[in-house]
Image 1 (cartoon, helix red, strand yellow):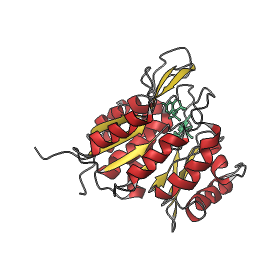
Image 2 (image 1 turned 90 degrees about the horizontal axis):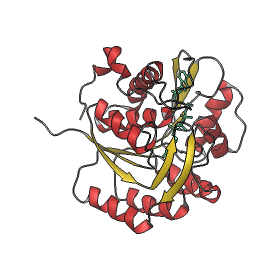
Image 3 (image 1 turned 120 degrees about the vertical axis):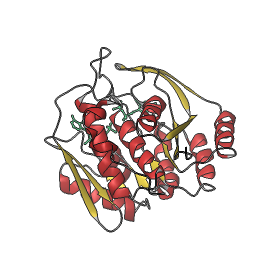
Image 4 (image 1 turned 135 degrees about the vertical axis):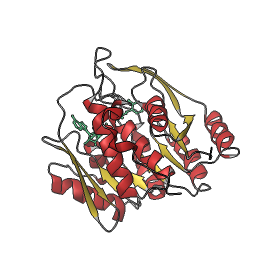
Length: 274
Ligand SMILES: Nc1ncnc2c1ncn2[C@@H]1O[C@H](COP(=O)(O)OP(=O)(O)O)[C@@H](O)[C@H]1O
Ligand SMILES: Cc1ncc(COP(=O)(O)OP(=O)(O)O)c(N)n1
């Protein structure tokens, strides 16, 4: 058997399995990509919210990055929760040595409303990590924070995507409309074209981990050598099915279903481009 495509996630944990590292690894596995993980923070959380957070010592973060990249191939990677500037500096320096697609999910606040990033780290993320990313995937409030403007309409979403690319320096931006009204519409801008991805809105409270799952799926498809617009299209299908078949587990916002897509088989028509 040929060696698989290999994807890495650098993120925080979710012991309830719906978001963070756990969601990313489930997604990589489901999309037949070899998954690897570097933990930034251990988060005691579940479907109802975040209870407490323990940030790993910076030295442990460095050693995990070194352990993976000195030994294993990394064909694409993503970052999720990076809580403070110290961690961001280490990750920034590591990224500069790694020349493969980088997907940044600029995680700031969980569905429960709990903050996952220090207030003073937001500027650093915008100034030092965004320019290194092939793709940044903010939801509405994260995009508002990045561009410093309110987003009320689809035109505002598209303008934010353009600013994240042209002003902040990302390779591409995917502004996600999960928190808007009506259909779930996301806009991808790659510096040249604006692509629109639309799905029906699914009436459910079980949306814990949707952003993690979506960005992990994009990372998985990029690790297989797929072009960005197609990677996003397939990932949108994946996350929509994961929400459609989500589980009413726990007492809060339940998790998405990472194998829900098997009920809608077209997603498995992928083949390696590398
Ligand atoms: N209720 C829903 N029905 C269908 N798609 C949704 C729903 N909520 C979110 N999505 C989609 O899930 C993905 C994650 O988006 P979003 O919820 O905005 O991000 P985050 O989880 O980072 O807050 C996007 O493709 C969005 O359009
Ligand atoms: C450790 C960790 N990372 C990220 C999130 C937020 O994930 P997201 O996919 O945006 O999901 P919800 O915020 O919708 O739960 C998290 N909760 N924990």
